Image 1: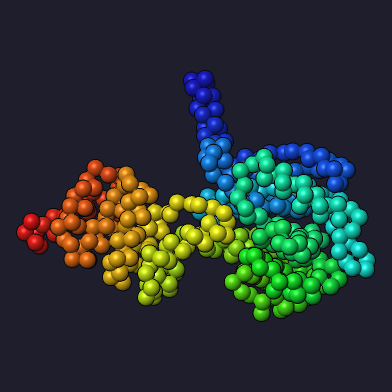
Image 2 (image 1 turned 120 degrees about the vertical axis):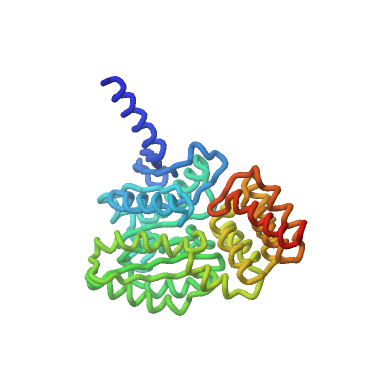
Length: 384
């Protein structure tokens, strides 16, 4: 009996381990820094099984305390498909954070150890991650106070090193609050920028952050995706736990499955083809994040339902055709193709389409019984 319990426990632990993301600890010998740096890397849950998939990179400074909240939120959001699965790379800094972020007293740009650390990330760390892991061409940097200021220096590279910047109560260097708004209009690549403070944040940092927000708000454009939070009652440290999920949710809003709000406020109000909305959504995901994801069943159902309600029969046929190609062994595409053909005045073809899916896998509310009911109804109405 004890042996059986032990085997059961081992089996349970094995399943639990398989379901979790993987944490790797590495020591990176940097020639730029002339020292070894400790890294903490979280790989997505399916990294070892899905060998064709690539993943965005999220670089976390101050990983001694920031890594877990970032990595935990990334794992949670990606589990529910609210953001893509990503590789989280934490740089352990500790007391070296001040030397790492050192800047010149005259031009306030990185100098000495700060300049070395700047080159370490851009010329050593990111190439190493790209060469040793399956990465997509989308990177985000995360920093808090002193290190939040530091990640902004990468905005001044051409093009900027990172696609996204999560600034948590930045301790901005002199002139940075003026330099960032001046730099943003000159950036031609899509840039995501998140800024956060709290009403109980350190007073000087809160005031400077609010000042930066006032200068950045008017700059929102197709290339500059900007978001700001000022959390009520949040301190310099507690705001971190609230800001990280907010930042990820806002930065990856286009990636999320189509929501009820998006369905009612966008899809049902469209006069243009809803099928094009679906195609554009996934083209944006590919262009922004470097990911060629299959269209989710949820998004097929949402757009097809909207097209049916709007009586966009050609649009529905396009959506159905895409679903047939992507999920050929399910009833998904056949069901919506049957509805489209019926709406287009081709009931016999619709009936045959419904009948032809009797041996396929059911999806969501679309059952074989429903398909056969649809076919029988057409047969009864038209006397076939």
